[in-house]
Structures are given as C-alpha cells and as structure tokens.
Image 1 (tube, rainbow, N blue to C red):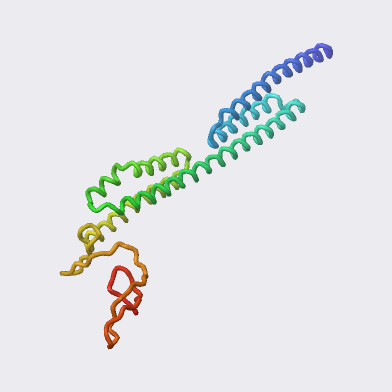
Image 2 (cartoon, one colour):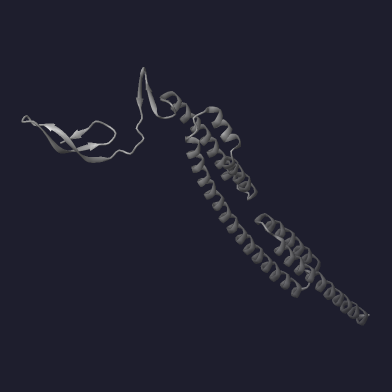
Length: 231
C-alpha cells in the first residue's frame, strides 16, 4: 500500500511538473507579447493587471511546491520592472510630444494675433477665426493633446484661442471708434489728426536764424515728424 501511494505521489509530481512547465512558458510568452504591444502608459497598466492575475492563478494551483513559488515570485518581479520601465519611457515620450505641440501652438497664436491686428472689418474678423487655416491648426493641436490624454492643456489652449478672438474683437472696436481711414487718422470730436507711422529720429539740419544783425544759417537739432527745432 505504501508503495502504491509513493508511486501515485511520484506520478502526480511528474504531472504537476509538466503542467507547470507548460503554464510557466505560456506566462513568459504572454509577458513578452504584452510588453511589446503596450504602446501607451494605459496599456502598460492593463497588461500588468492581466499578467499579475495570471501569476496569482498559478500560485493558487501550484502553491504547495516551494520551487514553483520561488520561480513565480521572481517572474512577478521581472514583469513588474519591465512594464514599469516601458511605461516610464512612454510617459516621457508623451510629455516631449505635448511640449512640442504646445510650442507649436504658441507660435501659431502669436502669428494669429499679428494677422488679426491688421483686419479692419468685423465680418472679415469673424470669418478669419471661423475658418482660417492657422486657426484650424490650433484646434487640431487641441485634439492631439486630448489624444495624448492631456485634456487640461487642451482646454487651456482652446481658452487661449477664445481669448485671442475676444481680444481681437475689442481691439477692432477700439480702432473703429478712434481711427478713420484704417489707422491713418485719429478722430477727436470734430477734429481729425493724421497719424505719422514713420520712426521718430533726432537729426541735425541747417536752419536760417535771425540773430538781430541779419539772417544766418546755423545747424539745428530737429525731431522728424514735427516742427521741433533747437539751435
């Protein structure tokens, strides 16, 4: 009877060894495949959860064998380290991409403001913000930021675009109330004042001056754009 029981135990051990070998190999293959296919931090988390469940299942089935448990504990640690490293790499790549997109959006918004400042008609301004190519680029960047799981920065970018539209509208209304003929004439009640857009410079020019004994020519300092002369 003892011989039969011993033989039975030996056969059971051999079957367990064979089964564990198959299941352990399957776990290793699943881990390799999951790490390779995980192309986002979120997928890394999902892969880790699935693999940990598989490890726990094997621990439950082969928990009476100390050698198997040691192998499973080491495998759990290896899987966790590998997936954590992959996740960190993907997070860093995502952050670099986010910063690239935000830098691009900053440059687009600066150009947008410059273009909008030259518009002198409300309908034209509305059409500009509704369909102009560089405006659409900002919205595309916001969509890409959401795809990168960064909705906060996407919302901030859309808010900046909205603020730019509002500021351009206020600036246009101010120009329409203050200026005539584009920005060439300032309205001041009944008065109209021409705007000099040339750069102001300090120059030296000859000027006829009466010193009491007759006119003479002297060099005078002159600021361009007005009637200021100083001998």
